[in-house]
Image (cartoon, rainbow, N blue to C red; front, side, top):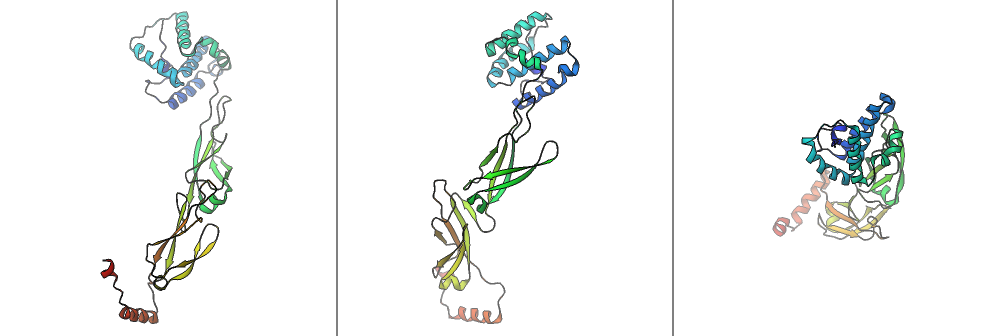
Length: 298
């Protein structure tokens, strides 16, 4: 009996290859030795049978493991027997061991057609959407360059409350299948962009409240933006820069019908450009004030 080197049949140098490399090698060999290309003679038919047989075994993880054990035992001391019937007998036994039937029973129909259907590859892309768009849901059109170089437009339905990093699957919109195989899918990965105003952490939305020194010292009522609207918030007197105010149920959707919180962080801003009158007032305040922050917090 002759041991068939399926890796060599697919013109692979060794068995240290990935499934994708095996699939690519099969495609190249199937095109190269297809009966319509080289003519329907005995050599091309036999060669094509070997190619299909090799791919059938190596493309399956379990049968490939079994074959690799045999490959490691036989490849270095293979006998060059030229008897066709012995080759076919050994081939049949190998296929029977892997699949429980004869090679001819498995692939007669596929060989007669000359090609095996191959599913197209999946494609993944990423799009940025605002928190507002993600919160309410929307339809968004995206344009991608197809394999033929032309731009193709897709409509992506984004559900309300989608999470950052989630993927939306568009069935059959990936790369085309071969020989009647199904198309791959298009996966659209969502990245939520809070812009300058918001930052999402879990279900909570973070924003900033910018206060003047007098507002922080005396307290003030300020407008704070949320996803839906602006709300009036009372800032207590004496609030410090870096302190946070939590507004319940104004955050992002939690997927259970509730919402997280809106957390506003205080940032006290000092004017860079002042009028002469403002300078005089600040100078007068510094002389009157007994507040010594370095002595208290230093």
